[in-house]
Length: 217
Length: 217
Image 1 (cartoon, rainbow over the protein chains, first blue to last red):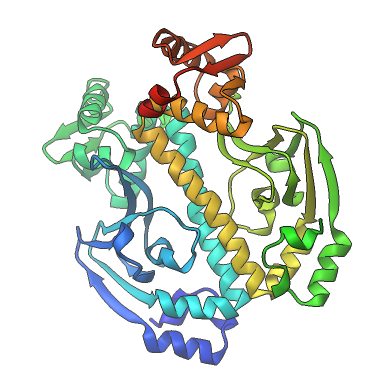
Image 2: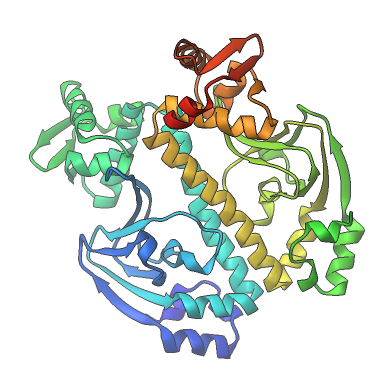
């Protein structure tokens, strides 16, 4: 499949702009668990995901994490090229949650074309607005939704992503997604187990009463 | 003072685009306490603040609030024109915290020019990125900073805005800025009073030990 098919506004670029992108495009594979963008030190470029799964998160000084969004096939990661927009004053880390194949448009090239193409500049705004909306949703969750509901929602979402009710995931990983401590998640999952909503084994959380979890979330 | 002086990239617009903006510009005054943009129902346009002070916040279903940013002289409010960017999928409310004078560029006019001007499209991205960065900062505060530190920071910030150590502000208002309950703020402020950091009277919070509050924040 061609790169152009992954780039929704390809036809609004001039042939010269298209050539510039095609000529600089980097194809890359990232193994599950690899950190492919690392906050302040990197301004790699825009990631276009061919296949796989990425997680973008922020880190506290004490090493706590919270997932701000996840990216799947055909998604675009703009914040890995945050240097193209001066006013982006925050840092994210991106890791691959599965083996992932991606294309990268180098930040410098993208920035040059964005400066002359209103179409690309507006497309970039739309990508940023999508992530901004996800973060606003997250704030509402953190502020106004109790943690039991957030854990229930996360388990349901994860069972869709993993395409199975038996989730391969550690308590630590759930805590890092939701911005809390492992102990808090362990306590919550034991409560869910007592309520016959899940069965816990080492490294897995199996949803056995989807309805009850849906009602809670 | 002319509108052009409030609009940093005015000179990058064509004379035709400048005329279009000048011809559609709305001048408006808002009294302290007025709601000038109301979530889903409005897509008024971009606000350019001549003088005054605005607060943008989100509301929970139960009517709880949290301030997501504040705007002062010469600031621009993009999210009051959220319909110009399709992917902005959240709603904010904007109120004037002081008597405020502003110019409004109608959303439809702005959108038309943004579609043809790379300069304006990129400028718009920068405004959005600034607000996005403020929201990311807010998430970090909510997640990783205890409430006593957040209240201390808020009091210091507010004393700069009000240009006085004696703040005219209710416990309810502080709670609405920080996304918490009035009772929680009252308890915290009483603790601050016991620690000789503030003196509380009806409708005021006076900072009497700025250093101690700074250390805490």
